[in-house]
Image 1: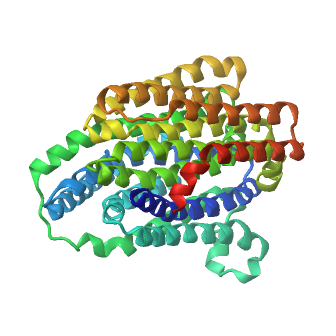
Image 2: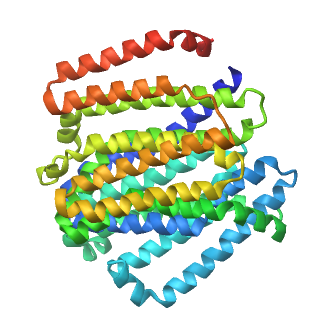
Length: 479
């Protein structure tokens, strides 16, 4: 149980580092939907969709490869130095190439030249800190990791409130140089500027890590890391497609306004996203570090079971109080037209978390290429369902396509894992909790909408059932 205790401790800290920034980002949603109409929110979404895509390309799986080889290698300096030099070189090449063809690229990305330049700056700065952040996680320094992340998001939040709210409400308290260049019609640009400043400060904070280890580049190590990492990159690109292509297609096939409304309501799934991301941050280095332990597979099984229980509770809770959160967070009713996507997206993200847990088998057996194929399959489902169903059922097609993609990826990964790296997952129990939570959520959303007494009763019933089924294991964990 000490192993599980360490996992939960690290996950709580990484969760804090993820939850608080995401919550602070969540605080920005009311500000953004107040300051931006759905058309401008569409521009904001387009910017960050492309940011996600290029981030996956620029890191090219090096973060996961770093964990894999840093945890096993006796020459940790070589691994760190090789990964860092490689990422720095490719980032510089990217920066030069992009600016050489910037006139063509900003039109292709459908971004104004100024916004495009900011995007390139953010991408370059974020790529340079991939290895230092990975080093903090691999060397078990979650507090340092959390601190830097919090500084980053704190800057983003403060600058957002300053430019989008304070300058508009209290212009007399703002410097003249800002007022001379301020524009109410271009508020979305201040969101991007805030991100650029935060990325620059993060880079400066982590700069000492760039010189902590001596330059010791190893081509053989790079070849091994590249062979391990490039399938991860392709899988990451497929994930970006699963997560974001729907928004671009809604923009092209329906309208900017529908895409903006869809992206705004999608934010209501943030609590599930936070939970999944916190788990991934804590689990990835943990899985590698514990792989040689005798009871590792049993540990992985227990973790997945409790992940599903917690995720199922989050799903039910958010669906039961969806309209409360809608009115609290998205106060502009222009966005509410797409509110029905939220339960589907919540369940989709829960399946994504299950997939992250199940993916341990191909990461530990160095079969990342198989993981790439699974992700490509999910991306194909996303593309096909969106292209064929959006004209038929509108924006709901995007939500259902996301659920279909992540659920199929989890199922495929489970069956392949049984062959290559069997883990004794308690499938019956996992399916039971998923069905129980989903069933309660469907009844609450479709038949007892805004009836918080019924919703609360379902939540309490779910918790009681989980407690009585898990009380023996819980007592052992608490000890």
